[in-house]
Length: 231
Ligand code: CA
Image 1 (cartoon, rainbow, N blue to C red):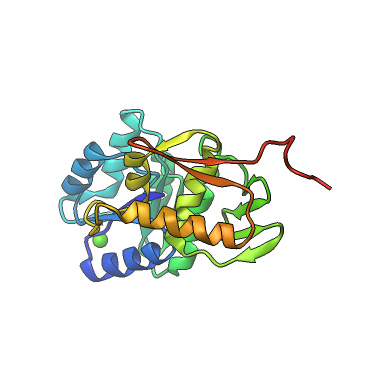
Image 2 (cartoon, helix red, strand yellow):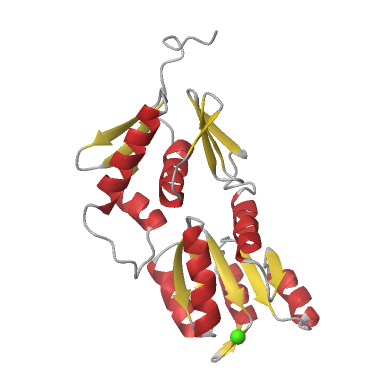
């Protein structure tokens, strides 16, 4: 999941984005309205996290602009205490949620996931294929009910593949969802993540396969229903 964070306080922006990256999100940080408008033009985002007081204007203008353009991307407003009026105005303009500063990054991550589970992005809280399950809220992976330790980036990769089970997820789309624009991504970073995840799942006895489609991308393939012993 890829987030656009619009926050002009560099220390706070850095702290929030580091926390979200640890939770498995890809984050692009912008410090002004202009930068945010430019970033939106370059890449689609799953959620926009928006501070209201920005050096070149009011964050509410961005929401107004997005909704006018028919952009349905969820917006979560990050507001200072005492900006109650702004907060209500933001929700009226089409923001989806708000969080009052200071907040816990874990809470912010949970709110982002909740926004992504809304209709449109919704496929249920637990994604399943074969004997594998991924709880999109707790970010836990289980095989036949037993927990498997999977690092956040690989959980994000697995989630992306599970949501498209049986279809090929193109490389570019996977990279886009897993890495922020300015992240140092080595050319084979995705292969490495896929290969580690494949080993982890195999060691845990998962019956799904992560198939490489050369030159295109990757697909998660569930076992044939006829092949799997349900008993
Ligand atoms: Ca600000």
